[in-house]
Amino acid sequence: MINKAKEIMKTLIDNGYEAYLVGGCVRDSILGVTPKDYDIATNAVPSIIKKLFKKTIPTGEKYGTITVMLDEELFEVTTYRLESEYIDERRPNVVKFAKTLREDLERRDFTINSMAMDIEENIIDHFNGQQDLMHGIISCVGSAYDRLAEDKLRILRAFRFASRYDFEIHRDIFYAIEEDNDISNLSKERIREEFNKIILSKKPSTWISRLFETGLLKQIIPELCVCYNFHQHNPHHSKNVFDHILTVVDSIQPKLELRLAALFHDIGKPQTFSIDNGIGHFFGHSKESARICEEVMTELKYSNKEIGHVRELVYWHMNKCDTNKPRSIKKFIRGIGEDRLEDLYKLKIADLQGSNAFYEDFREIFKIKFACEKVLFEKQPLSIRDLKINGNDLINAGIEQGKQIGIILNKLLESVLDDPEMNKRDILLEEVGKMVRE
Image (tube, rainbow, N blue to C red; front, side, top):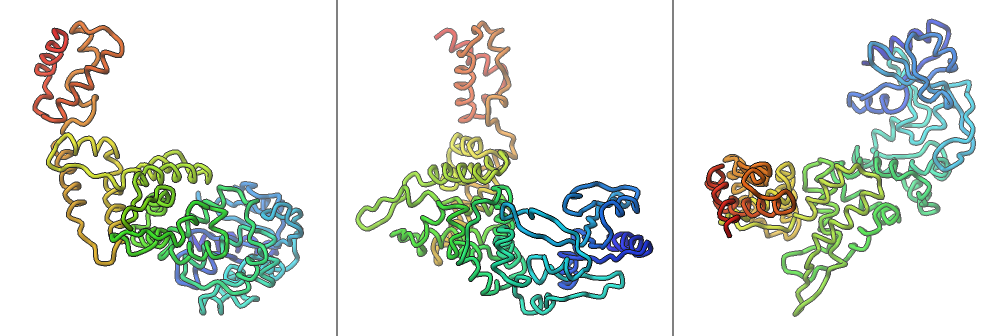
């Protein structure tokens, strides 16, 4: 991909213009990480860029960006630019084209993103980005207060980059956040995307704690802040609710739905807390946590699929089944859904690991897992659609069309859940005949 980027750069250079790789691709190349994409900065204006390349898309022409398509791959080519006032703490009010590369780099957010690379792969670094990379520091280009005030999303981006690379955030950025941490004008979608990247990092607990300390978490998930220092008064829990939640988030697989389920699994505990003889109880907390989970994820514009998956994991994370009773096992599978079982086991294990440093008995979880796997492997019936007869069979047997059909099918299913051998057409029809005669 870099060769194609260089091909675009060469075309610009051969036509008398400057061209440099800029931003994340330069940062990642220095860190030894293969860039996902390559962005190019040039002093050629958009109209010239469109003339020089056969296939272009005016993705952000207003802001000087033209996407060039080369062999089905896309490259953003942007004219050097200056930015003045920001109309909504996110987008510049006026975009003016700059004359030099330095002017363009000076407007960028962080020093590690303000470097450029020429076609010979020489690094241009006016703002000590390489030094900050070496020392593991997220610093703003110029005044931290000015950079963050221009675009409030940069506040969350600082946390995202620090969490991704395990860097420290420069104190000047924290000072600027103390002065103004208001991110209310940012779209929920943008907040969600940055937050997702933070919770998918190596140790999200560090950065969620920092979000709390800086007053940012209260603007993203205020319900989680209620859990802070909330003592559980329970021998099975050595941590307060907030710390327990973060421990579970850290220990679970870095898959978005799992990290979110871990984040929300106990968020309803403060609302359901009661104490009896000095022992804390949280009756119904999984149901309350699922309610909060759905509410927050809806507010942050997650997809219905994501909301449904995470909500059900949260709701079922405390549920058990009697592994000695086939009906109980099957109802458990039907309740959570076959496609969520593996994620539920992982959440249950992570929850147990985070509950007490000395309590790691996973036998009950594995008993449930093996019992469910047996039912699924044997393809035992789980729902009405698995029955060997259907509504048409009942109508043909003389049952009037209507709600009685559903009632009878559900009764048959209850019998089959207890005894899978009953799931034969002739046996079920015989049972229907008995119901009609009764």
